[in-house]
Image 1: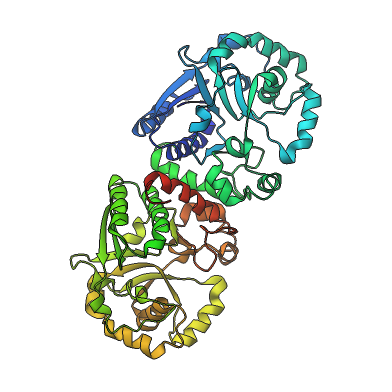
Image 2: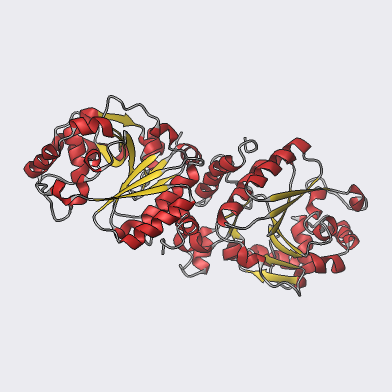
Length: 275
Length: 275
């Protein structure tokens, strides 16, 4: 399985927690981790790489080619990094046909195999929409971005790199951002939805992108079926999206316990990095 | 580390969950598991053994010598099994000097090393008292059992087998049970407290025997210090004691999420046994 992450030095700890969860829930799967970055120190990358090697994983750091972004509009709150997942096909080795992008604030708690093997040969991406509690937000986003469909979350993306290489034009993305800079709230996600909403295969957010804040809403939507027992045996990716983060103090949502436990476990697998 | 468990066939799944948690939270520790039983089928023991071998663990099944219990009083609700942990010194190989007994309804979430290395050379056991919310129950137990001290929980016991061999007399235990059979509530625990309360080294229940039902009470007792983050980075043994069990439906306490996740993880390590 090939996994894509994109982050700066400050998110190395979260990356280790996330990779620990990938490792423990996907036994026997030798993953390659592609890490797009702008300048994480060599020493840290070497430590990460050697920890990963002990798990049978390989690290491929991809240092950004700044030239590609020479004409990219960059805003204060939303730096250049926001483009990386959308432009993964331009940044990653040509021989890669697909890749699974994961935000550093996700936690894996069941096998990713079915997602990795999902047929997206006719799509650019597979992604989940956060429905439920955010239905109102979805409606607003539909109007705001003039899409007719769900508002997809960009935290978990299966990317068809082969097709993206043909269909995605960086300049189209940059000019969309330039023209709509005043109304973009979550730029990478907004661009994904505005430009590519009809090229996305929808996946189940209960399984692949479970908004960890919304237990009650998932329970309601499922008519009581998605209780803790169900979630723990089905949900493969918890997404700790939003402002409250489970690695910060006073996080109160239900699945924070699980995240905190993986913070502990990660010390066994990344002894030199997590602290 | 040498671990003692005692259970019947119906608790094999819980055993696998517990051992998965021991394994993942004690990396590099090759454990020996002593399993005292009365007749778990050979085939199941062989499956357990081969799964454990793949983890670098060894299984030593100990089939009970019924003769030892010929004079033991046995009550309906409390079968012969209740004596095993107290009489471990008579049941286990002579060369073992100490052992860590764990109930099948515990979950390990941090390293057991400090407990295993605890000096109990002058004690028969190390055990924790469930204080806090159960202070009233403790007082009642003190009066009922005429001990002057805490009421110790017998779910996590570090046992000094060398000293127990010299000091523990099975007949003393059997006659205590015979004489008090009408007032015993939790026989093994009551006997532990009534006969050996002054031979027990007290350990911290926050760390070594955390009553998973009582998060709020622990939080109060610690003046707010033992919040989820603290618990997840310090508590080594969660004890899911009481009637509500995290493997049953509708378990609502906070740490049920963690137990359920280990039920999933255990499938990777005990594929032929957990279901």
